[in-house]
Image 1 (cartoon, rainbow, N blue to C red):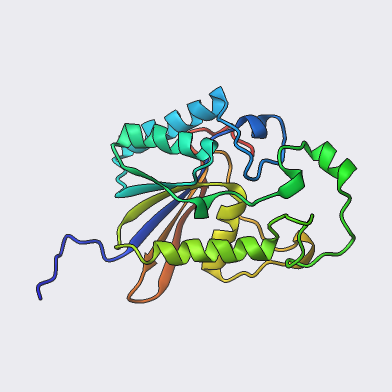
Image 2: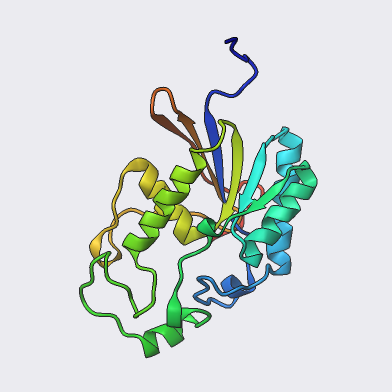
Length: 217
């Protein structure tokens, strides 16, 4: 069997958080509530698409959460870079149950949390707890690695992307929301390279949002 020297031998995953949504702008707990992008969010996605086009960025496929704020972001970039988009519910944000769509003030008033909670505990009865989200992120990682080696853009959400990064670097969820966090601003992205024959990861970028430097969240 001859080796195709042009075939990628590694995986390059670019993990992108969606642009600013109406829920972000209104300081709401979004979860799987379906808030669209704001005009600012659309501008952020267009700015990133313009940057990547100028840099000659190439992707073999864009995989997006089906939630509209992620899907809109993916479609703006896909149109600029002429890449196919595939929707996958594994990349949806954490399910928040009764928190969904509420403001931070409303959540504090209605759902006071206990002084101590483990990562296995949901905040409310049907909330997707940290451990459950971590397991889903691990499954999303496993699913990615079943694909051919190549360059993938993943458009998702801050909570899920954080747990994906934890799964890669081997950090299990902590009690009381403690432990490290990986920051993902709106349209901030991380880039990870995986070399399967060595089982070696390289983190090449974290929260890069040079296309929109006034992003703070």
